[in-house]
Length: 281
Picture 1 (cartoon, rainbow, N blue to C red):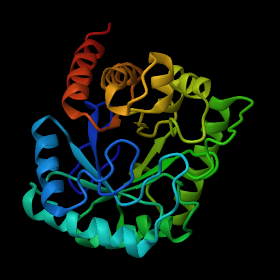
Picture 2: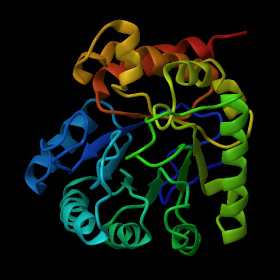
Picture 3: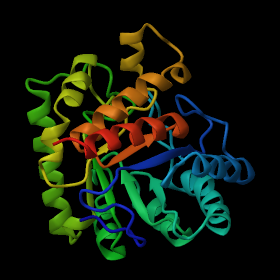
């Protein structure tokens, strides 16, 4: 069972929506829209009203081809927003920090965040896993082949599901060795991070295998480019329906956490799929 400081994710409980709040000038879909405290708070309020359970804040774009951002710059972007949100939002609403750097995570936790979302699964900064262990906070460990700058250059797999599962098990082992409680580990197959279209489809078709690991699974497909190639759509904000479809499929597969831009539409997809899943005999 995963427990946040407020236990919001329970084994076999209703899945949760993690709302994306990028305070960056260059994120692939919403860069520059919420990069000041007032705009971010307004956006967070709206997402909570639409049904978000967790707010995930990031100060570095990880779109394909993006350059890394220093810890100092990330802290300058995210800490004032987290402090503003913590003053405004109910304490029961968890705030997640989306970063691969322990210094950023530490500053964010001090400002009021209560979980870590690390797309490098602790590989970029050896101190990250130890920080999560010391602070006793949940951490999301994601699979990615390469780095955001290079990950889509020429990703290759022989058996993508097996390879991603193997990687995640290795990172789980590293997290446990670092002292992180198993109940605080969440895994993410990393849809769109160093994967071809067919790789992403294969992972989505086999979500049950990730769920069978016994760890809560996060699914992050929101507005991802591979869906646009299927739907013949280029603009990320035109992939809201496609994202909601994957949310419904994920609920039926047992996924417990969904990271999305568009809360209202995915809330509806989650609620309907959950009602159906609850009625399966």
